[in-house]
Image (cartoon, rainbow, N blue to C red; front, side, top):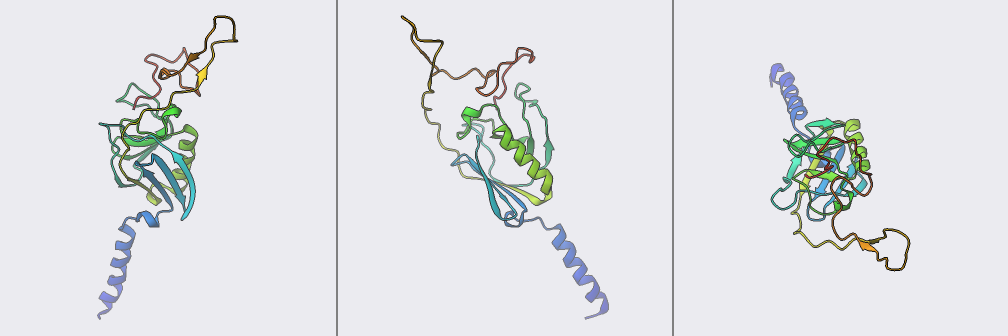
Length: 200
């Protein structure tokens, strides 16, 4: 072998290794989204760290399956397509598809979005921090499975309008809560209309 080949050969090989993308198994931060169970598991440096309920795309608005890397991060983001709805801690991984926080907490665990992956806002903040810490290049997002068919949700607990009195009867909250007043966040009369927090 000539000296030229001895020097150039390893250099080219090193370049190929640098350019080759990390596999999911090699990623420092691995985010697995299982559409069949509507869950997300987070593995950090090979150790399982978190498991959270999510909402992926509902019927007609599927979340794409595949292996992705974060493309862009936004601590604060509002949907340009769906009513200027807030998407806190957005991690965009495939065009307009993102993992982000959602204020529709009651719907987590079932398909409900327009294709994005919804998380509880505090869990979304944790994931966002991990991606920033490890970097998009060392993060892999794996989306797999098929979203379950829609099922009838159990009725919510009975809520009372006030103390029991003669002729008073409790009202039930079978009807879904208004989109502008999620259970964990009071209605804000100063928020400009329209008021929906989440519709995707």
